[in-house]
Image 1: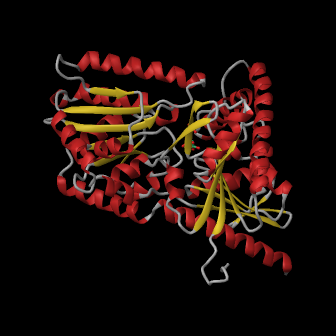
Image 2: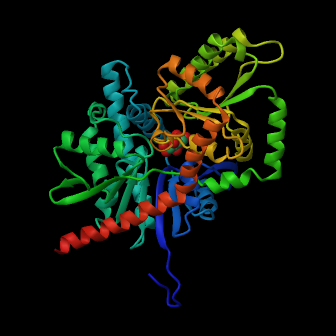
Image 3: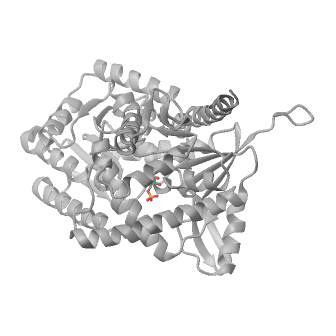
Length: 489
Ligand code: G6P
């Protein structure tokens, strides 16, 4: 692992995820502009210096013509990204259908779609076929760019078939797979018609990772109960071959958030926001507009709080940033109108001529505006019905070192396992409980806020995204070496 001059050669890491870390916008027949998107996975891996990372994924746009595909491939190469081109029909069946209408709700305990059984079964079959086909298309691109010694790290529920496709190409490829959502109880997973095929395909990987120990345990139980395989403390064993299964909780690049608070533009923003909301406590929700985020339940809990606490009605404001997502999936369209209706009703009920209790925005904010908002917040509400980890809770904590605001956090978010001791944990389905947590947070004495914040800040700044990525990849390298030693014995 050294060059002739003694400098270490950085290992190549092929990161394969459904979505690339840049989104492409077409400016002309062969002209594209790219914007870096700052999701959890992106910031985690951009900070990793130890590897030479390349990304493989869907650019998020339909590019039917070869001229456009060539131009986009060239533009992406400068960002170390390699596109997988998916046509509209595949995107509809694989991404909107199987990924986001079937796997996503199921893995978050919302069950399978409840339409007419026969129709569901028919569309289920064709969506599953498209899912396998799309995974094979990702595998073809990985295989084309793979060089011996590379580590291939597959991400998320979109690509559960990928480890199998890759190992079919080359059984020596080092393949890791990481799930960013919860893995549900085996009793939920077993309702999925393609339950066994998916488990077997994931087990082709050398290392399988989850955010929490519970998700890893659920996965192992699914393999033992549904496939009849043996679960060991190390993972799952099938005829002498071990797939290692373990928990690797993700973090954020906390330094990036802390540094941002020093930027003059952010300080200016903070000043404006403080003036704008002076005399009122600020409560904040930042979520993709997704049913798993529990936005209607959160807003109803806020309504209950206002109903029961007239004193607070003109002294608190809830800012809800709801980032539109997966807008072609009908469930998401229904949710948008449901949220708008509830917000309108509550603002009509408790608003005055000069102020409304809820500011609801259907859009994302740029990084600096978001940091400013986190910094002026008194109480953050992260009340997902289920969530793999939830990094908004981490980002809020990172930006709160001068304010020491309170985090209300769903016990069903992976983050509850790491930030639970500092946050007020709630069952998001229990609106009465969330309403009383809001009261507790708004009235919390400074000393207790300080103690809770310290705990969380310490965790967020010491368990970073960079460590997470380095830990996973070094475990993957070790796992493969151990497996080779076992075979030699
Ligand atoms: C979740 C998933 C990610 C996904 C993100 C945004 O966090 O775990 O894999 O990229 O949502 O969703 P989208 O469908 O827009 O990629």
